[in-house]
Length: 187
Image 1 (tube, rainbow, N blue to C red):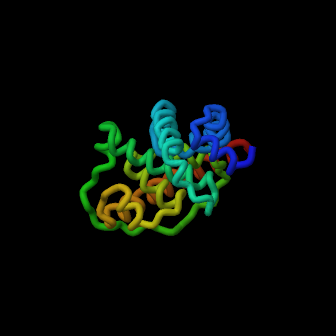
Image 2 (cartoon, one colour):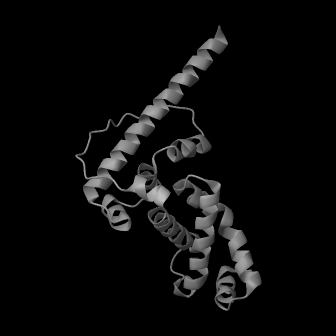
């Protein structure tokens, strides 16, 4: 079914069209939701809430861009709202304004697959994880991120820098472990 026709049918509340649209994007959007949360259950909640918003706002889609990108933006906003609404995340999201810490631009050369990198990002505290995802993965700038999270832009910059520093440390540790394993395997 062509996308325009599928969208029209979804707007008309045709359940088979909505099911088809959901099936078309659910798995990739689940990945987006999971990057922001700390559990599959929370990611599923965000996904469900996000698709409710997709179906209620689909009439606003202008067909001037990719439908998947439009849905992704809704999922990101839904995830951020979810984090701000739930106490277990809200506490980690609130951080006092602090001065920036310089972060090295060193990027360790590592044989790391995407799944491992996503898991390292997910291990960050929620505030760092969210900001890192918004800036590094989604491409928001610091000012947009600050507006979305209702934070001071310096806090966003600081948390992004700290997230990068933590990830750099984790990547170096990962790399060091790989080297040790490779070396011990040769003896």
